[in-house]
Length: 155
Image (cartoon, rainbow, N blue to C red; front, side, top):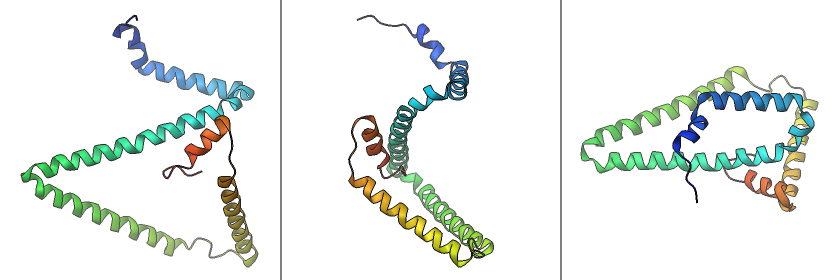
């Protein structure tokens, strides 16, 4: 087995490589729409796998950082401050959402027909989502469906 030196892989770490990939993706997406339509399943699978990796990494980082803080007896004061700031931020965000809802009154000026049609659309979506979850698919589309059913990825 041959070993590839780090210098040969150095171009993969360059920001210019990422920029070229973005440009190439835009050119393929805009210029070759038929070809790019075939890549959507692979792209969705890639993004779902990326989402599956990000959340465990974030949780691991937070838990290990908190464990290190707890291990040091001196940092109890920081833990109390951290919990207090987190609770205050949560309360502040909740109050901002409540104020925005009370001030903006979303849907208040909709007539009865619009409300009824929105309710029907939601009910139809729920029935369709339940039947889609019950029906199995095969191949890449089935794999993509399994990934989209994860708790942190909305279908």
